Length: 155
Image (cartoon, rainbow, N blue to C red; front, side):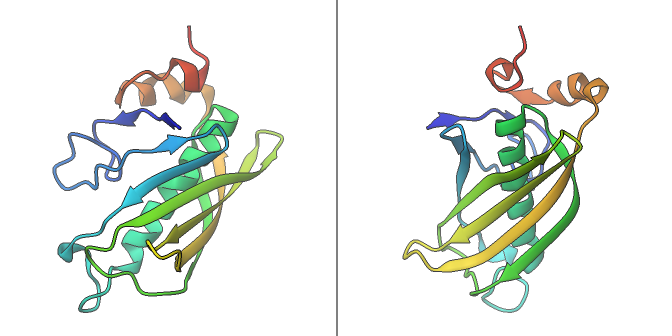
């Protein structure tokens, strides 16, 4: 599994974001994965992780799945999340994402999933992503930590 680069400022993967999750992502070239262990301050109802945080992690894994396959990041245009089982603080989960379709580089469709250590599905998601304009990519890459050349085909 190849470790993917991350950013300084992103809430999910940013190493310099003091309030961020600091997740690291890996890929086999098709599927993107990360481990996510929510903390007590991530709850909504008592003892249950907030659904908005779960959706945020799923959005991020789907964005990375699009980037790995298409070599372009995208903005979320539409997202659907199905919450299946509650997630409790302190439970390490496996999060996976995968590109489902590339509609002529106009829109990407992806899916994501969060599973508990026992394999129980916590939540699933689907999303549609609009690719960043090529002119926006250099500015975005300024915030990255790690080598982005392989991912984006830069020289």
